[in-house]
Image (cartoon, rainbow, N blue to C red; front, side, top):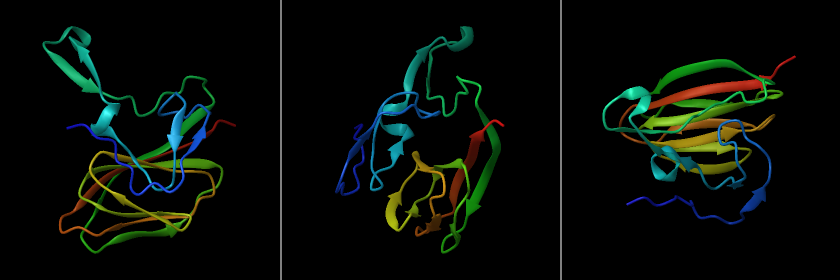
Length: 148
């Protein structure tokens, strides 16, 4: 069943701006994480002449040429381990939870995270991640910044 997770949404604010990974108007709240496996994947038949179909979601597109990818990391966070609270400057960092679960903190707000969740850490937001599960948490982390 495809359900959108709303981790006890207290306030949902509509933000009408173009995000590089979504390229659309989205609903945003610090209590919710977008999930790859829930409504973001698009069925694409015969991808590049292949057989059957694939399910895909473009995580990043540099449509206007103004953003650059600073890094892309694959990280394993063992049970009980964490990425400490920290912040970045004028860039945006995104965590994609591939496997495992835990607790993400962004500017004092706690968000439960699960496989497929995409968490955006905005400019100057203090953030950290803790593996609260019993298995390794596998994540992909990438950061973008304005060219210049």
